[in-house]
Amino acid sequence: MKQLIINADDFGYSKIFNKSILDLIKKDLISSTTVMVNYISKEQKEQVQKLIFLKNNHELSIGLHLDFINSNYEEEIKKQFEQFFKIFNFKPSHLDVHKPNNSNEEFLAVLNFCKENKLPCRNLGFNYEDIKTTTQTYINGTDNSFEDLNSIIKNFKNKETYEILFHPGTYDKDCKSSLNKKREEDIEKIKLINPILKEEKIELVSYNNLEESEYIIHCSENGEIISPISKFYAHKKGNRSNLTHYSTWSMVYNPALKKYGLQLKTPKNYDKNQKPMWDM
Image (cartoon, rainbow, N blue to C red; front, side, top):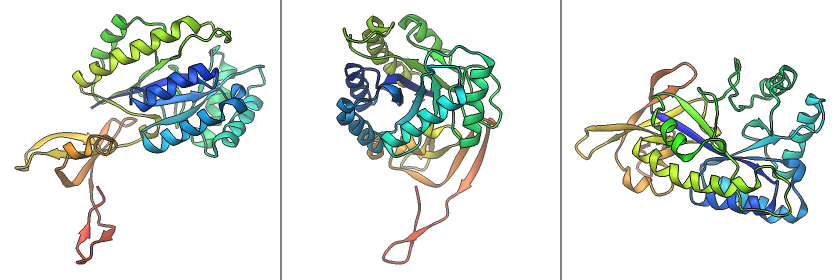
């Protein structure tokens, strides 16, 4: 199983950018976004509430997009982490950095904070021992053409997890972002790569699903195994009615160890006839 996170960076940078990100989430075209808490304003309150609502109704991770305004990295991370919790009333799903300078000091500060708080972070190609992240280094979708992304995606390897980051949005004349004019191109690239994921049997996942993916065995009516599918995918809106045949056991795949294991289902609840109800 090949898995991909599509992350929209820069939620909060602009109300206009936010609108585009929310629309992509509603259409299940992205699975993650990261928030610039220093830019969240009172005028964005309704959009923040919409984002929280979508998190509760879609498979979506909402992370913290760290924006360092000075080199006191530890203090900045703690401050922005606390601000995130104040805004959302829950912890970020993961951390990444706005315009990382890739210095050892910056990297170690983020790494240590993630270890202490058991948070995943974006894979920049460093050593991520004891921290959840994708098995492969992130891909910058903004810097790659659709043709390049098409080629990259079609070469994804089985049992690996990837992340492609984008900066989607509609042009905002009042925003000083250096990527302002590229954001609409990112929206089009996101729309174009999603059909490829289906063709290549690549599962769109979020940072919420990184450490272990539990797989349900999708069977035919005759009991023949068709393929393993993740529990989260099977329960995703629109899929449940088409994936009705389940076994009473599942496979668990750990991307970090690159190993599969079997998990027998244990009934937790009983129906009115005192028959076990399986937690599927």
